[in-house]
Structure formats: structure tokens, C-alpha cells
Image (tube, rainbow, N blue to C red; front, side, top):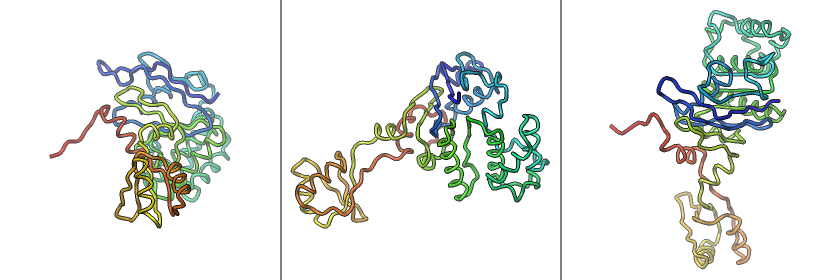
Amino acid sequence: MNRIEIHELTKDYGTHRVLDHITFEVLPGRVTGFLGPNGAGKSTTMRLLLGLDRPTSGSATIGGRPFASLRDPLRQVGALLDPQAAHGGRRARDHLLMLAVSNGIPAPRVDEVLERVGLASVARRRVGTFSLGMRQRLGIAAALLGDPGVLLLDEPTNGLDPEGIVWIRELMRGLAAEGRTVLVSSHLMAESASFVDHLVVLGAGRLLADTPMREFLDARSSPRTRLRTSEPARLEAALAREGFAMVVGEDGCWTVEGIRAERIGALAAREGIPVLELADERASLEQAYLDLTADRTTFVATGI
């Protein structure tokens, strides 16, 4: 019942089409990264999922139902879209208590989530005194308040310090491991690569990719191996006989294009050549993402 289903979702604002018949599913038990350039339609999709806007056509459902028809929405879906949403004059605990009471959630749950996100010691401070990172934690606490099976998080690491980024990474992994559905929108490619299992990529309102992250990277990486050996001349000659060239880097390591580490390892073992380091090199998530979305970016900077 925690499955998110987007089917032929289209959204027009006047003559401008923001989403163009996109279809994908977000499944429980994994962290799904929702990526795309500015203006790709990510925020619009999340707003449509939460019933904050109406689609021009198509549907966006959670557990087979639109958000507006959910009987206890906060118990089924937790969302962080805007960390500035909490009123600055309200105390952090009172903000969560208001949400709990209005959704039939026991008051002790408020203290549980404040403790979980690390805000228990500042629970009675006014939200207006919070840093951006603290507001992010408060927003995440609100999303967790109803112990929902579905989490929608828009840029959850924004404003967090390094410790906070590690914390949110482990939190998302833990929630997915519990069988929840976790959809995370982010612009931080390197950070996303550390916790995302599956990718959904939009560009100019169209679906560009819906695939496991490892397959996404493999599809956009030519084979390349990094290695170190105490006998580079012998290994270089052996690879040359197979049609491959070793290139030395400034750090003393060698790279070989067009071949996987497994094949080099087998060749070195057959020739009796010691290998001290051997690893496949793949494109980073950022490189693969930029390659995919290069012609789907709405806002592009140019040289001056």
C-alpha cells in the first residue's frame, strides 16, 4: 500500500507544459533519488502527489489513492517541501504538537521525533531563532510525526553540516530498510550517490531515466581500470599483446581504457605479475547525470 504511482501525468500552466505525460513508480524498501535540472518538473510532481495542485491530465496516487482521499494523511505520507514553512514565532515543540493534535497523533510522539532528529534540547525555542539546518531537522521531524509508510523529501540535506548529512543519509537508508517508500529530490549528485538505490530523472518535463543507480552509471561508463603493480613493464607488455595501453598518472597509478579489472586480474595471474591495486573506474553520478540532461536544461549559464 506504500507504492507511489505516477501515470501519464501532465501539467500545463497556460501555454507552458511543465510535465509531459510522465509515468513511473516508486517502490517500498529502497531510496529513490528524484533528479533533474532546475525547471525539470520535480517540485511540480511532488506538489501534485500531495494534492497541492491539480494535474492537467493523468494521475498521481499513493497506495492506489489520491492524497486528498487518504483518511489519515499524516500517518500515511510524510513530506518535507519547504523548511521555512513553520511559523517563526512558534516554539518547535508547539509546532509539532499542533500537527499531532490535528491529525489524532498522541502527544508523546512529538517528543519522540524531536529526540530522533536531535532537537530535544531546543524544543522550546522559537523557530525564528533556528538556523537553516535546524529548520530542516524540524521539517523532517514533522514528516516523521505520523510514522508514515511514504516519505517525500525535497533537498533534505540543504543547510545541514557534515554530521547532519551523515545523519540524514543513515535515516533514509534505515527508513527504506523498514519497508517504507522514500522519494528524495536532490541537486547534490555526490551526496545522492552515497544513499540512493534507484533513480528517476526528469528533463524539461519528460522522463529521461527510471533505473537502478548502478545500471544508470554502468550504461554511461566505458570500461576503465585503475591499477598499481611492482612490475609495470611486464604488465604493459602483456596488455599490449591484448591490444590495450597502460597510461601512468601523476600519483603513480596506471589506468587502462576499454577493459574491466576482472580481465586484467586474470591476465596478471596467468603471467605471474604481482598486482598491488586493481579497481574498475566508473563515471560519477554527476558526470552521468550531466551527460543525460545536457540538452534538457532550462537554465544554462554562458561565459562572459
